[in-house]
Image 1 (cartoon, rainbow, N blue to C red):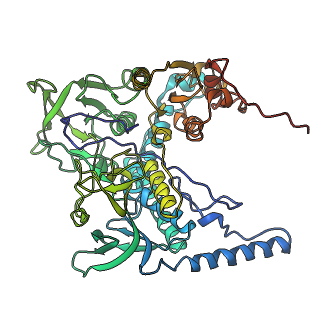
Image 2 (image 1 turned 90 degrees about the vertical axis):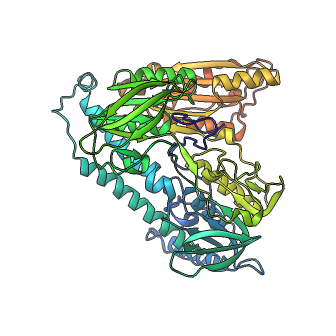
Image 3 (image 1 turned 180 degrees about the vertical axis):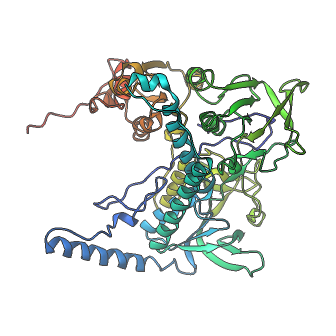
Length: 573
């Protein structure tokens, strides 16, 4: 499964791929206590080490001191690289993917360095997942306070809601700074060497790094991971001035709230910003190249989402068009957008708005990596890799000891996918084969209500079923049937299950409703572990909770009665 693709203003040959700026997947440790360095889904404290003062008996305190000494010793031992190399692993890029790989490498005892040419945290922490969630938290609160009908139903009365633009912007910036510092500290605490500068591969197992005006440093590594991420994609004909014609990087600073803003692209990024801007009082116009909005979502979910997220709000839209030219506002003139038919390329319309947000996806940031030194050619900017993230050269051969993860390889442009790929690579370089199942990776759009999914859409599932010769079935349940959702007065929502009735395999789950982004993980974990419907329907969910939406969904599925369903033997207590 690929991330949602927004094709607005983008030709089929364009490298733009829309991404989701979402939270990162986690991984387990053998520690008995939760870690305290887990931010953006990454570890909070290295390998579960607790630095709080122990309580209780002196025996407990002694045990914890012994654990600390053992842990410190392991870090010291971790500083010894493989013979003949400066490092066991060098990671180029300190975004979420690089950070996740580095932490897992330390756990595996690898001497690790991470090269960062900008700031730790990459797009997710500094210009994506983290600050956007801060803005969306504000938009969610504003919507609640502005909904007189919703408040009245709960018996609440609130005076007119307002906001301080700079205060909202500061909230997003402060959150990004805090998380960035936490990630940096977590790397330092584990003994990972953070090398500042631009990383370039010189040849097999050799990398240089350095900053402009300073001499380069050359290091060697047994294995190299490319994790350089992506940047906003801006199609030809669009002039970005960073003020009235902006990308998501600029929009997250919230330097002003326009009365009318055009959003080019209706994927994750465009939808989330439409939620923010309309909550803060803007009118929004979507410009979408395809014939429908939200083209990457399951069609049924997209139709419902449009009815709830777009139709009742101050949003209009143009579909089937490209923004062939966008000129920033200047000399008292507004932003001018020229639209052409996506198929015929004939002129369709001209819009005059206060601002335009270019949300046409992301482009891989892979220039200057020195790929030519290892005989690698990018494909539309992406580094070609196999299912194990091993880099492939232009002759189709694997490049020994070089891997590429995250947005730079284009397999699935999600922050937590990058982290999962990084962990998978570390497993491999540590001697354990591992192949990541991308169909088990969830995605989410943090609108109000939220959208989430994992696996195949219904059209994708039907196409695969026809090709492979099996039947699929669909189960659906409404949030209106969930007690907790009704208690919150948030009954608008749908959960959809796509599965094989012959063996109970879960092919896809799609959710639209309150906290959909949190609910999807039961389904994604089931796919990861290979759990079948006939097994998971025996799971018990607390009542009343939103998790019962999934419980009801799985129980509604009808699996062939001849399929065995193992049930645990009862245990006397």
